Amino acid sequence: QRKEMEQFSFLDINRATNDAIGEAPLVMDLASQEKYDTIKEQLESGQGCRVQGQHDMYQVPSKLIFATDRDLWIINKLKTEEPETYNKFSLEHYFEQLSFGDISQ
Image (cartoon, rainbow, N blue to C red):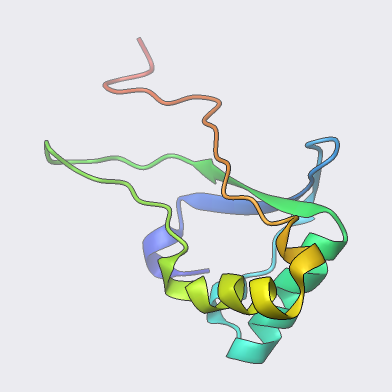
């Protein structure tokens, strides 16, 4: 796991039921073609991902960013080479809990 992301866990989910399947493989460090193949396989099998954890921010203003721009090439490759698989791709996000301040009160 990446040092700067130790406070988060990454789970594979069944997109149809939203149930956790198990711990997600760390695809961000895979070689390019292996990463593409892994993500393509996950999309075709109906998998999604869930990130959970807590991040303390020590400055105001501050940012917490979940981004895909690093691997935009994968999305573009799917769009041109695998349009049916590309149509399963979604960047929808929702937060079950987002809080500011001490949550123990």
